[in-house]
Length: 270
Image (cartoon, rainbow, N blue to C red):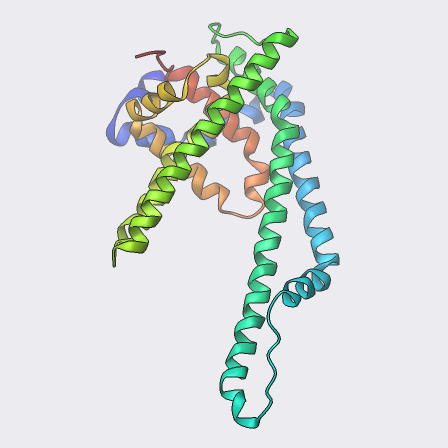
């Protein structure tokens, strides 16, 4: 895979994007100096998620009872009232466990967010070293405190803009699917497609931040390399759906995202 293959459109660009995750894994495996930086994010994610799951399991009964206590209490005063009391009890039982599942998902999400926050400096350093090994001398790492603060603020701003853009698109598509009968058959796949389209920004973000790329230029960069971005975003999306795998491949995804930026550099203010 080379610079030119990533910039090609159509099937060639898509195949190049699909191969980026595998190349990121091989890149880390080959470059042993990257191993310490790659291990730390995996350690944080594994430990924090394991802690969240363990604590949730220990408190499972208490969490379930807390949710059940918020639901109305149904009593059958006469035998015939079981006609609606029975289904109502079943519905509340299901709602209670659905709330437990939602609470579990939220606890894991919080653990992952904390892991990502703790891992950010190590992933940024990993991205810097990948650029250096790949032979890109255009961007160097920031060492001063002021530079670090500016990069952090720029990173938060870009991520905030990405999330707002994603939420707006999701909201519009969800509203269309809810209002127009049958539209969900189209809006559902569109939601997945938008997620895949924007997903490369998650893993290329460190390299893009160092270049001071605005969110507007990032969108143009995505659109200008649509085939490669779709391939990379698609394989990343599928990999992250596998429980546990998403914890292990984050360094490889960041490595792949960095290589993507190095080989298809975005143009500022195009």
